[in-house]
Image 1 (cartoon, rainbow, N blue to C red):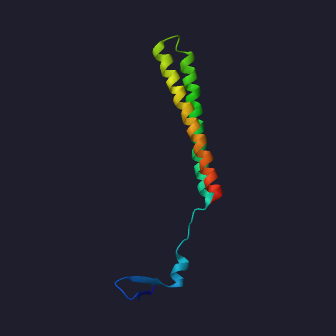
Image 2: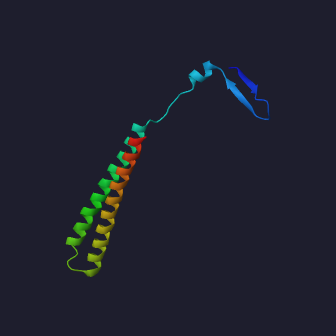
Image 3: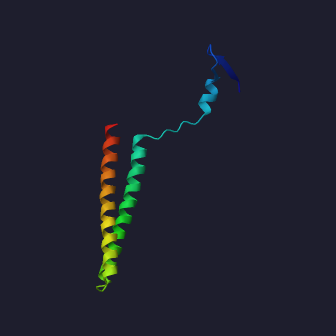
Length: 102
């Protein structure tokens, strides 16, 4: 391995690496499709979790037996889950639009 130091004329100095060494350095770059797949997977799991929370809050509402506190808790949980689902859908749309344009 031969490292050569090249003088750029000022205070800066850079290391010049032989082509043989460059060929042995692994090149791993994530493409747009890999990033898009990663985001889509995250949105899928977030959506599944939001739907499970909606189902659980519905069950909690049904089993509240008219208790005002439990009904309020169930409604707040349902509202939060629906808002979360809307945010996930918007994030999915924006991400796929931006990555599709680039």
